[in-house]
Length: 235
Length: 235
DNA sequence: CGCTTAATTGACCGCGATCAACGCTGGTGG
DNA sequence: CCACCAGCGTTGATCGCGGTCAATTAAGCG
Image 1 (tube, rainbow over the protein chains, first blue to last red):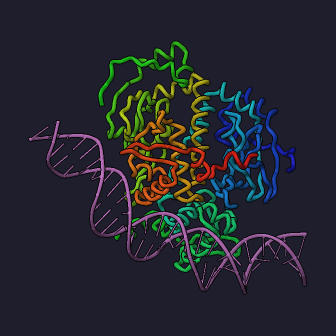
Image 2 (cartoon, rainbow over the protein chains, first blue to last red; image 1 turned 60 degrees about the vertical axis):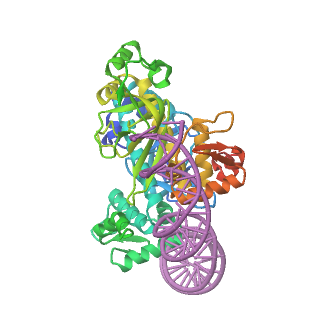
Image 3 (cartoon, rainbow over the protein chains, first blue to last red; image 1 turned 135 degrees about the horizontal axis):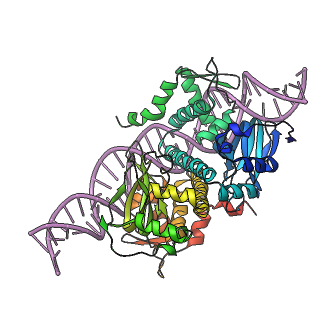
């Protein structure tokens, strides 16, 4: 971890644009910006955290370790996302781990300053509530997906989620590089099954891969698989 | 739905005890208390809601309908829980349905009064953030469970969750009556599989059933089966 | 260029979903 | 209060998805 002397303009981010001048000064004193290389662990399950992190740049994988060594990825957090805010208010230990997937710049805000903002800035509180509520909705959807959909359907859906969040370049290459194992852990399956499904999708001309880059060739085709194949099983 | 003329003392509930006198008066004017018989639908997926509900008494099932007709139960909400608050802030339509499982008394608070509280009472906001964050943690845990554990393990876990939330009488009878189908939809499986596992647990002397009542005979035995990891891993 | 880690493919098998048939029960009306 | 019957509970048979194990190939990386 390398501390930074570069000044980031935090105001460009919605959450911090809600602070008044006095609060902005306080934030500037409180905040700590750091850079993390790919592969770095930001925090581990069970740690006691003294603040939350705001992602200025890069991608951070949020996950839980299961019993059998398999890990479940709960979120691929990117620019503008906040992580580790969940265990702040009740001072619990972290129930997830966070690992850097793509070199990241993080802004740490202390527990106490977060509390100060919650208690003094209703617009900030409101935004935090919005964020947590939105995430709750996503989690609910995901829960139903995992229970009721097949690996093939979920894989198509995860690829679309990644496309939506990280977009692709002009050649269709997803702007996030993930291993097959991480893809599998997002989908909620094992690497081998993910690979089989991915090869299937490739042979159908929906996706492609060059080295570790993933290409999305036919988003609407993936959408059909993610949503409509539920009907297939009924016919 | 029957409107009530009975006065409930809302102050006994943590969330409302945070209001000052002026806000309490406002709440009294805004709130609408109603009674719902078992089987009633409180709201449906896709509805636009104009407020949230606070459960004064009874049990309400929160669920989503999947593609194949199977529904996934996301929560059995009881006394003191709030429901439908999720879609309040961004004015989205509801992404879940709510059905009364055990005759219920609900207190509806309007969208606008909720907003007023968020904007004026930091302690209220803070409590809402606490609640949403806690629920997020539960959802995360549940997600990993569903993906990584067997139906048998999840069944044991769901029974323990019900025991924890609704407790049992002196004979070990769970103070919530659920059909096998609802149990299955909590676990995330089909009725037949749930029944097979339940019979198995009964033959092992861990649980029993009399009519629609469920008896928990050996909680620690269930814990072993559920492989409750959270604590173990931290030691 | 060697070495570690990731990706891929094949064989196998068990869990759990599905379909079907039947017993049970509690809530409702007569 | 009792009879009825729709909905709930239970069991059996079957089958395919997806997890596990094993072995080989490809790809990063110092």
